[in-house]
Image 1 (cartoon, rainbow over the protein chains, first blue to last red):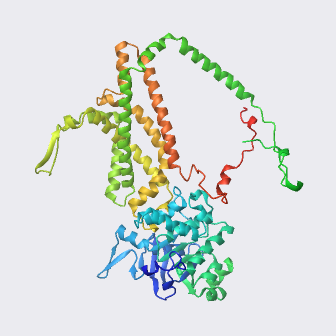
Image 2: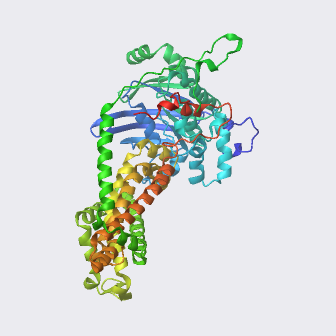
Image 3: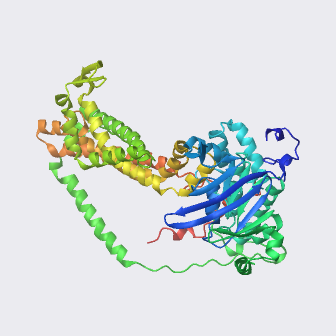
Length: 275
Length: 325
């Protein structure tokens, strides 16, 4: 991973051209179940996301797609199954066939490798755009303020908001806030980015800017799992499309083929309603 | 702030944009307000007259003692008591509020018990208790339980009446403040915690840098309230007994000269002055923690950016109409 840091300007921040579509699995989700009390939300999910791949998850609300995404980042704990990111078991340490909870420090370390973008942006309202971005690099990675700031301005430029570095979130539109949130996640140089319905809270005319940033990110080789309702994005950018319903994966495969020719009645019905 | 006049704009080539004619409606009249004003002015005049003419107020005595050295020292001690006990209370309250939200059940129980105990007994009782601590424990020593002693000293040397007063006021206040801080922490959207966690930040860091600064917006106004309350609660320290504060000093003078009313006026005047100063301080603290939410100072932007322009739309109310009732 570190070999890319000194490469020429073609290499955008966070990009990793050396590993684009190497076909190595980065995320392995194995028979994952999740209960909220008696409510069985995830009912045995299996999914693999390869290095450099854009994996898009669609499905009706309540299908468990957001919950699955949150499990990858330990915002929810899984009830059964295993999730591996880069061969590292998420949330637990396996010792002689027994699972041990990770300490909060170990959990924080795992999360550093995984960036997350939320539906409601969740920017820190008391910090300006640039302060939002440098928070984790300076506090978690102990980068110097100057170094983190230079990187933050570069990232803001990349998401088209170089002029807005000193704006507070309340002074930004929803689309601008979400792009700052993407820059904030990228500042930690994650190897995986999770997007939890990143455009669902946006006015229609602002969706495009955010999707464009995500497209550029996908092109740069970032591994991404995207929960969305944007079928167009899935078709254009996605490498795989997964349709979830009722806590199970109904159908998964090449986005263009799946959208054009869904095999299951439920997929057909869902696509018929959203397209 | 100039009034726009429809004729004042000359558009190029005689086309639009044309300034619209601003509405100048005749406002509704409120005769009731004038009646109320007359009545209120009459009452104020009567009270004012009595303040001047009623010799029982003894303004000469008020003037003599308002800058009396004992009174000024009393103000100093009252301020010191207020500040120290509030600082102690705030430190404890942050700790208690964090403990209450902790994953560790022991911390949660201790925090709950502390609030239950110190909020559930009168502050007067607690002050008397701290004053009597030397009776209960004449010597304070630390050591291994049932083992050797490491050090020991007389309680009276350590817990003077001043320390007892600060402890009594501070510990009692910490219970109330803990609830205010807890409410503040709860007011912060849970998405903030998740976002910070997703960035790999540790819980303690998230609390200090992300959650608490946002919670302060909610915490500061009631804490200002409590500070002003504390200023006046210091008048109870005679229970310890601590006898240098403003209330005790002024009533001691009153008892000596047999004139309680002018000394009450002296004390009330100074409490009002301090309260007013505290309110000014609170205004600045609130402004600090309102950053990004309540007071959006226009960020330095390039000329092409007009995002903040929306916050400074031109006033269209004509100035001469602003003051009418």
